[in-house]
Length: 187
Image (tube, one colour):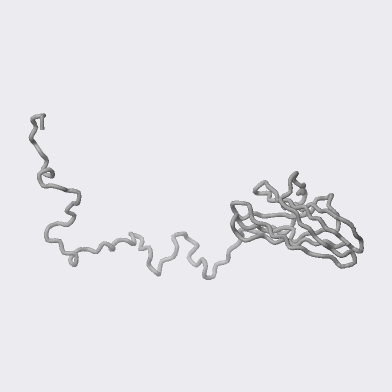
């Protein structure tokens, strides 16, 4: 050392001290208080005879009645508009005999939202009147979850032709929509 200071701490003289001496001399774990004593705190949490910490919720789940919660949409709200986007998300072809009662196609729609989302489905006002969809309202799973299955019906009523319907699925909470063009060849 060029500074002329020859003093050294005791730890420097003794070697490595990265592991401390946590137990006193003569320590015997069998005679000491166990580390688990006091873990339940001063309130005795974890004891079977104690209920929840919220007054009035003592029997929740046993005989309590719950009201409210999240309700699933069942009808299209009044005033909701179904407007087709400029670029549809898909096309659904159908083949229907004009003399039949009609035909059905099951459309599987993948969920696109981050959370569960109410949806409302209907055809635009300029669609052919023979088209219908069910269910018209419900709850779509979150992204990566189960697909939503919609049943598209075409009931020609004895007529024939090439008919087009624009199916719009509104997702109002996400401020988005999913659109399909349904093309029926009725012969």
